[in-house]
Amino acid sequence: MSIQTINPNTNKTLKSFEEMTEKTVEAKVAKAHQAFTDWKETSYQQRADLLHKVATLMRVKKSELAKTITLEMGKLLAQAEGEIDLSADIFDYYADHGEEFLADKVLNPEYGEAIIRNSPIGVLLGVMPWNFPYYQVARFAAPNIMVGNTILLKHASIVPQCAAAIEELFREAEAPEGLYANLFISGKHASALVSDKRIKGVSLTGSEEAGASIAMEAGKHLKKVVLELGGNDVFIILDDADMEKTVEWAVVGRMNNNGQCCVASKRFIAVEAIADEFIQKFKDKLSKMKVGDPMDPSTELGPLSSEEAAVHLADQVKRSVDEGATVLLGGKRADRPGAFMEPTIITDLKPGIAAYHEELFGPVASFYVVKDEQAAIDLANDSDFGLGASVFTQNIERGKKVADQIDTGMVFINHPTWTQADLPFGGTKRSGFGRELSALGIQEFVNKKLIRISALNDPF
Image: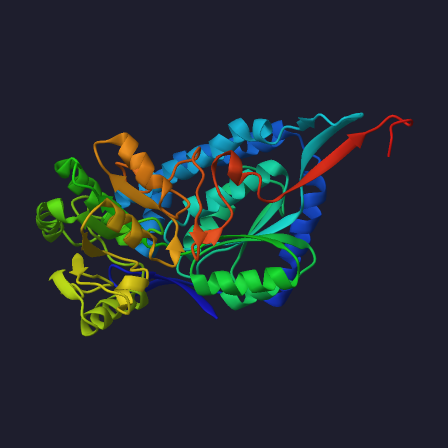
């Protein structure tokens, strides 16, 4: 199988890589297993020093790394540079706080003493997506390397140069051989690799289908798995929202990364008292977005990650319209070469229509009008996904009460769902399970070992 870099701005192939042979993959797994025996014995300071080196290198090479993101999956260059900064921050965050997060927890049994010690478990397999090719890896690799685990990383097939660059960063940081290894393999091969006894856990960020495949294999072999899958995040506009700022954030929430975020605002739910004002202003701003080359600083909306992604999104919109949805803006492929889609708003969505149920991964917003706050909450929860949500209101206590009733892993008040190193990230329902980032993210792949000290005469 050929793994290719195809520039989505032009749909031209830039570079190809061959899938690794079984022999090469076996050697990398063996090396990761061997590296673990030494890495687990290192001090937290040694691990932190390595993570800081990786972070420093990322910042030094920011321009070069960011351009690779833009070439391979079409992210606007300024946003790609922001991703590199965020990724470096995550490496630094776990270097600075990992020892504190992993410290022994002292228990107080009736007799004797006891502690819980967080110990590494071994080689971990990460299966990562293309939409944030450095950030997704950072939030998996940084905490687990700090724990003392070693990493095998199967990246998305459309970002091979990003995948190779991350491995090179660890090499330049003088990481021990086998600590972090990139695997140029297919998704099917990655699922099969889960059965290897040397691999102790798996983390996947990606589609429901890929998550189900990995989870099935992990379950069959009794291995821990963390899944971050799709999202259909709501953006609720209550009647007391600050409309100007709300619309500004609505554009950012939907169109960041060309609309290709798991936590992008996808379902816009406005109470009827302010619905007309919101949609008029939202539509006006989207209609004026400059679509073009993501390398051009003046571009506001770039291509989707691939021609396949653009075709799929256009088909979702067409199917939804055929089933009764109405297009308020756009609705078609942009009239230019490359994997482009027009900024789009669709409405009149009801159960049974494709866009009511499916995640729209690109610059397409779904718009709903509801009677009141309770109806907004009910509609927000009528989804198989449960990743993030946003609530816009000038009454913060009201926002908190609404947040309590939304069934998602994250709720942001007066801001689109987003991410940073010190905030936990993860969802409910078909959006997956487990948490990444913050103190929670370092606890997923550890052995919480009880060590109990008893006096010989303590009762049984």
